[in-house]
Image: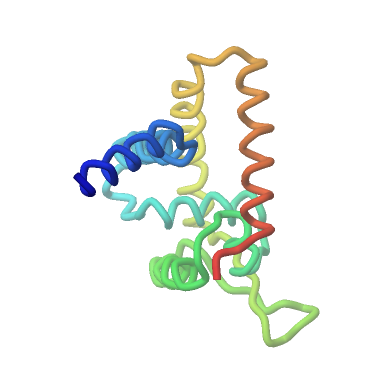
Length: 156
């Protein structure tokens, strides 16, 4: 009966959870995005997230990418290295600190960015079409509050 109680507690916690619906939403969205991105572009989900962030914030550091995406430094480092190898991004020496590099899209990266963004915007519009404008605004506000709270308390 102890196992039954643990299962019941787990089911109850899942049904009251905000995390599980958010994970489900992100996974559904990510799968649709992956299906829409042509395989010839040779981009993993995390690589196109990082490509989008660099395109939106030219001359950004890897640490700033971590802060904007919530990805670990190791994940960003691996994906940045892959994007550098595929010549979609480049490193630029930081003018204020010669030990640091900033990241920017190459011409090939910009061409890819211009193709990826409309796909993402279309998928986002499709996914959010079930919401009214006030609901969408509330959702964005709530997600911003949650993100800021989680970012202020990083997992150690």
